Length: 233
Image 1 (cartoon, helix red, strand yellow):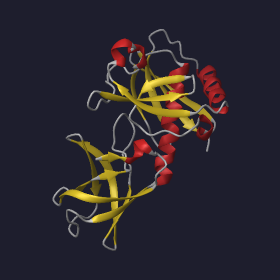
Image 2 (tube, helix red, strand yellow):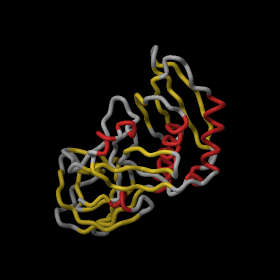
Image 3 (spheres, helix red, strand yellow):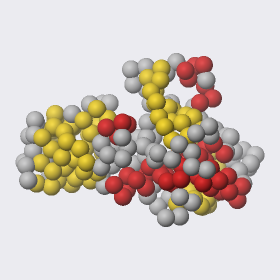
Image 4 (spheres, helix red, strand yellow):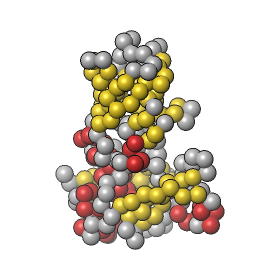
């Protein structure tokens, strides 16, 4: 399967063929897709599939057995081999792209291990290993907004996963290993500000994120602190 969202995160519509279908579970698999599958704290894409003059709702996109699977609302009138047009819900996807990029910036200004995270439409968050309570709300908000205004380019590249053995500091998450496929990993680079493995979708430049606001900073146990982030749309 070709992951079109890795080649172009701004692709809103695409053509594909159904290569498998499960009518009981109401799921289908396509030969290529722009639908991002739920992973790494980023929600799966929703949208619609147009097939043989019918519009079928895509309720979620997940990974199953290393395949990208669409959960749909109707599978009775679909068959393997049918050509379809897929349309993602761009409003939600683009918000997730901005949120995801903002969380990378948060990583760059908080030099602590990441213990968890979640991307949402209204707000997103990262959990940090912060036993000494070093995180300062006003300071990190000012630093992230400064990086946004500097309009750093955001790019990706595929490299050999062995680089993680040579540069283990690239991995910020403490509990989840970066996604690897055939010994390769995808790196996301934000100017000279941040570089880390990530399989998600991001905007092309930090200026697209817009201004951000740091919400609640919550204590989650003795070691962990949760930093919530919102976008000022």
